[in-house]
Image 1 (tube, one colour):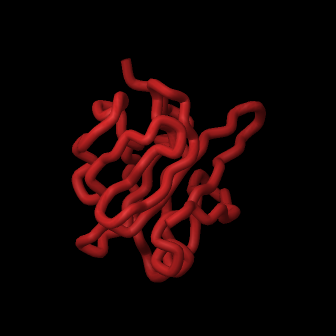
Image 2 (image 1 turned 135 degrees about the vertical axis):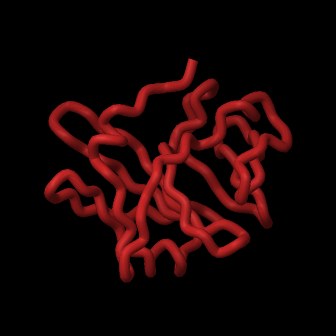
Length: 125
């Protein structure tokens, strides 16, 4: 299942997207833009039904696109697979660098991510 791109809303230090869109599509991609900075983000529904949000980057290969296959999330650039629930590496060259989870809150039908957490993100060593 391919990512579906959606447009987030940014207001008052909060980045929001529709939880309904994530549930419907299972995997969505969106970008946070502020000034000269752009950070690729993703959200998905895990096998347990939880909605998770993360930075949409496979850091070693610089992949910015993912897909779902069964219970795995896969980088479209290098093919590395991670368990969709735990993000534990399954196979591939970048198993230690799954999409980096960013905490979010699901309130009503809105997923809320703190802008400060996204702005502060930097690639892992």
